[in-house]
Image (cartoon, rainbow, N blue to C red; front, side):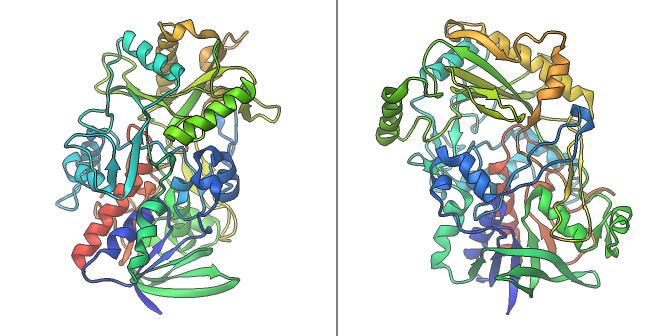
Length: 528
């Protein structure tokens, strides 16, 4: 069968794109391909099952040793299931700051093409949302449910109060007029259950016969005729087959979209020749410009019960009751507080993000982390605008070989300096009442004999699982897609996912991916 549009990847952007195309007046025949399976696992639906969901429904990628962090290798899990990473993530809903999109608009040199300014994209976010926050900036009729933590743990309330006492303004809605300040978390949830991109955009499509969804369909290659994309080759039910379409859209994410381009001969000639793939289109930026938010975890032992469930059965019954009556607590989510903060008055805008979790972690013998056996809390600190860049490369010409992920998280020393300043802010908040009255000890970083704070940060910083940038949007020599998201030099081929972001936003990236998918859907609908 010949399709009007094939979408590769039913993640956050792919689902939003499919949802938009379903409502097109021209009713294009759309095929949505997902390498993973159905999203009907209770570990996906119930947020407390996140770790199990990751184990069952993620691409098990492991990065190459990172020389900028003592040669550490780490998991780079990405969702392989309907809904993609929105089915396994922490559900934090963050639009990003308005200035992020105005910066994109300047960076991509849009040359009278599609605008990515805040004025252009904020109405798209609004159309996505069914938010419990009031105000003209927020959407209340969209398909994606967004709820604010209304009954936080007393440790979370104390953290917010201490941040205010430290001089950080309270912001009731960081997705509203301004992002800066300390807030209670907003989550992609309905009634305490995960509201993934599949829940929001795919499930309603049962009434629209023009969109067909195939799961367990692994795309191996984009088929080209000259400079035109004409179809994809995929493996499904043990059979290799080729499906053709007028338009191909990659929504496979910041790791798999560049991998698929390179497997199809689109990329840096030197890289393609290294693995023996004939060059079909010269785009040296494919796989380059990899970014993620560097994330450091600070952990504190406290003198009251936290979500670590050290209080025995009475506490567990209380947690169950909180979920049953209010749809909150650790069954619904761990993230309860958030803050967007400037590390210096000289910064033009917040340059670090904090997540507060009333639960603590401890190192495990295998180098990982586990739940602490004592009452404790964690503050996750990440640099919002990292300057370091890594890349994605092919291991071989075999589509079954995992790509090489080279993070280089501290390639630019300024990112390390930002985290040093961020640690000082977290420590100041935790030393301020009322949270200071609950803190008994800083477990991590804590006192490090013979180790400087910089050494500790370099050794212990991980990623926030927000990879972007590997199919950069723009018009320069290293850009992969135009501001209209079509691949430079290849007709009928588009990309809509985190890979097109020229630079990171301030905040979690899931909501932005949905916005990108919906935005391209609007553009494609206008063409049909």
